[in-house]
Length: 402
Image (cartoon, rainbow, N blue to C red):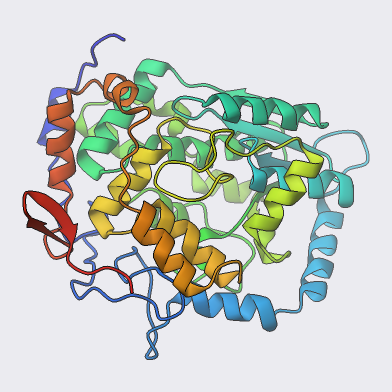
């Protein structure tokens, strides 16, 4: 691959200081590490909160989800919503962002085959497809869906991934930009007013719960606060990244989205969201296949986040910054869904959370154009000192889940 040219101005951007979960908001993380008494997540997860009994917001929502929400009433709400947008002229009436994975397959298939909608499925390409990720997308399309795929300029993608890795400790920030922006752009292009995502991750997995009783989100504030780490795409212009490079990643103007009456919603508000059940459903209905190699690096799971060769580095940086790796993320929600006991989850976290994603390491270094030495210097900039300590030349977490 050719060498990346880093704009001089971007080098003036300071790296995210230890103790803050994003660059612009400077919201501090609690330096007293605590673990949820019901699952395995810690209070280092951005935007999570613990109650007086030491239980996280995601676990409290899971209690509500499993025992207090009237899901039949919620489905009636869904049917009423869809009836307002369903078209009978053969035109698309909703947008569903898809990867070919278990969750997006569940959403799209339910809307089309159970609720008689006419979805246009849309895909923003990952950084580098895995073989199974590409096969799953093809199998999903073959199961009966129209799809529009967007692949951004590889050199631009690489540049933004390099910058977001170096300055934010998250290689996936540019992908998140595209995943959020592309569906809304196509909704505007085709005059479609309904965009259906899968789950509200903030509510389901522990974060800002301001939308707990809402089924739509605000394009301007929610994406900025929850997904973009305080760094929306156009902010990169200030640091020398050309505006034309950023167009595929930029959101439409929120005022224009509102003017068009475009609603962005989550199916998880209307139907109980169980990722393992989505896996079984998509395996049966959209040809989804799990990781043929067994579990993914950094976790015990075989069916989540399979699309991108580099997704392991997103989870690894999370482990460095927050002490929360991929196994923690998987085990926490499976404990809440009663597929694991907390004791089983603790054992899985201790076994897999610290595993380095070595399989595609060399390819990732080439993709972002850094040496191995440079990579480890980047890693160390994001290693928070109140989480980590060095013992016998090895870094270890000061506190582990018990």
